[in-house]
Image (cartoon, rainbow, N blue to C red; front, side, top):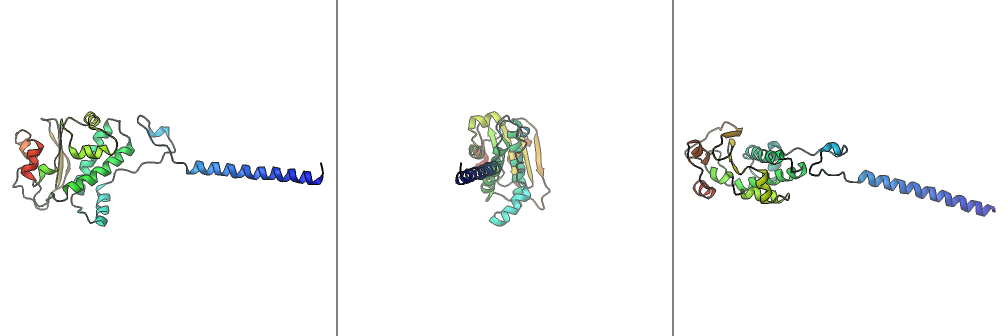
Amino acid sequence: MGFDGVHCNHLKVKKQRVLGLELRSAVQGEAKTAEPPTLRSGESRRDFPSLPELPPLPTAAHYRSQARWTGKRTDMLPEIAAAVGFLSSLLRSRGCVSEQRLQVFGRALQEALTEHYEHHWFPEKPSKGSGYRCIRINHKMDPIISKVASQIGLSQPQLHQLLPSELTLWVDPYEVSYRIGENGSICILYEKAPVAASYGLLTCKNQMMLGRSSPSKNYIMAVSS
């Protein structure tokens, strides 16, 4: 083989090495930019050590900061955050809904409740509109929960399996409380002393504490909205 043949073979080997290095670099680059796997039902974060931590559910302070830019009222945010956190924890306790879906559910529910309560929030009269704001599951799913849950792929039959069949959640200025079952105890989730409040109206929660039976949601909404 002459000089030209040796030179051509040398160039061919050199070109193959360069192409090999470029291919290896491209493969490594794809591996670096590939999206991390997401958790499926029944899997734990230990199965994916490289999976980044999910951000926590937004707090009332986060919603308050966000509301300053959108022009929405901020005085109801702590109460809404307490209600959202409670409902999310009920779904989480069954272990059937992933954290990513719970994140979507929490944000969507916060937005839905903020819009729903926008013109029905009266800090000077916390009892006013109590029935309108009340979240109620009475063998029929609350429409707000049902609508928000559909965004993460949960149907009404699935919600009935994950949530109590009897649940009342009161979201009022300065106080968020709930009751599970028709004769269960009323438990406080969030409480803050009001600056000045007038309790002239009898809330649906107070009616239950006085021993009255639970009125239907349509009746509650009609008399206290």
